[in-house]
Amino acid sequence: MFKLIKKITFFKFIALFVLLSACSPRSGTVVADPLEPLNRRVHALNKGLDSNILSPVSKGYSYVMPDAVEDSVSNFASNLSLPGTVVNNVLQLDIPAAANNTVRFVVNSTIGLAGLFDPSESIGLAGRDTDFGQTLQRWGVVEGAYVEIPLFGPSNMRDGMGIFVDMMLDPTSSVLKPTMSSYRSWAGIGAILQKRQIYGDQIDEVLYDSADSYAQSRLVYLQNRRFQLKDNPSDAYIDPYAEFE
Image (cartoon, rainbow, N blue to C red; front, side, top):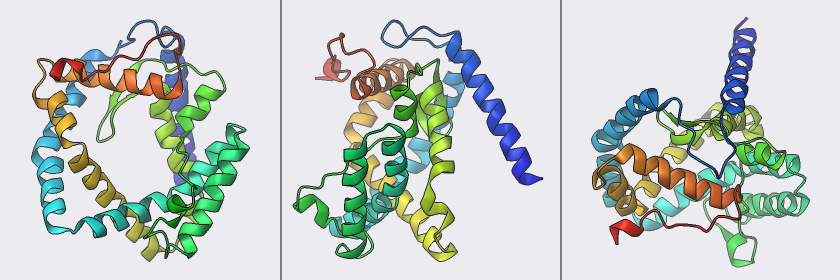
């Protein structure tokens, strides 16, 4: 019964995605934000969580943990995400990237001691990151309406759906033992805390130094994501942080 409910909820989410995506202009034209009133409320929630929890905890984490330990924790989480990345590489018919990430996973899981270290980088096997949002884009799905997701932050209908599909497609979640799954979850939190500290200045500029943090967050996300996926390659990339310099 629970599985049936999950499937029904998932298909309802897809239906909502298709509806809003169909009503939205193609990427690279204008910002499609029909959900702005709701998005702003979610943005206020996310901003509060950042100022009261994520930002101070990330500073404490960085202060307590040596850099080498932080790197190992993040490497461990990143390594366990590689099988899901390989699935998306295959779905995008990007076989070279799939092969690269597969070898990277094997090397880091063995020589790198379960992914605590990243020997692949030193032999030229850099990670080729991707996600299901990019898979959808590869097959012609437009970005759809802009959305801000609780906890996850800025996104759009296509990439927002991709986040949840990636969770379902992740092959490691079904094979890891409960103890290892727990380690992975804590390592994922550690990786988030490290990233929050590394990019702290840029994040603080957007969230706390801009006149309208919601509009600025939306701008930064859409420009970076469109540039990353080449959704509108004819447009020149504009640095969203230029006004702060």
